[in-house]
Image (cartoon, rainbow, N blue to C red; front, side, top):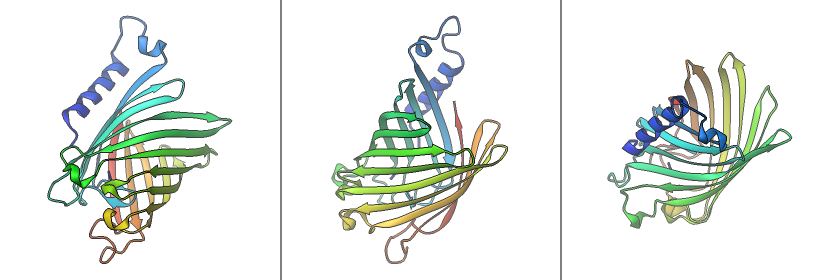
Length: 246
């Protein structure tokens, strides 16, 4: 479901300042407490969430701010412009999240909760929702595999219970170039309120790091028929993105 507000720009600047300049005169109290701060900003030719267009197939500016602790606890905020072609009821998505991530004998795991908010949208639309997320992953060096599950007790637009199952891979190719892929299944309790029936989505893409910038190019598609099963934004398309972390 998921234009940055001033808060996101401020967060990005704060993240860069802490990582580069803060406490230069002495020991970093954040580092000594096990806390680290980071920020990110990016641009995509289209914001797609689980295969569905969130920006009416137009470009999106995105960014976020994260706080991590060496124990594995983390929290953050992320935002993007959106356009659901609903009379501009929603123009911004803001995600708040927190969780715990760690590894056990090379097996990476992550347990978290996410709140998706759409400031400015009519409350009667019930766009805001919670999700609980869990994932397991393992890096075999030649390829990293991840399986994840997301559950919402009341999904976007008051569409009831929703379950999302996905599997993904990423493999290095050559000097900063990687190939990645994803397959997911979205199950929705009240399909009429959500706007589409249960569906599958998938993607195949390339990632490249160039002078600290992360470039991505992805082919994205679903098994929905745009002419009869969804009004717009579920057909095959290619999305380009560039982002930078601080």
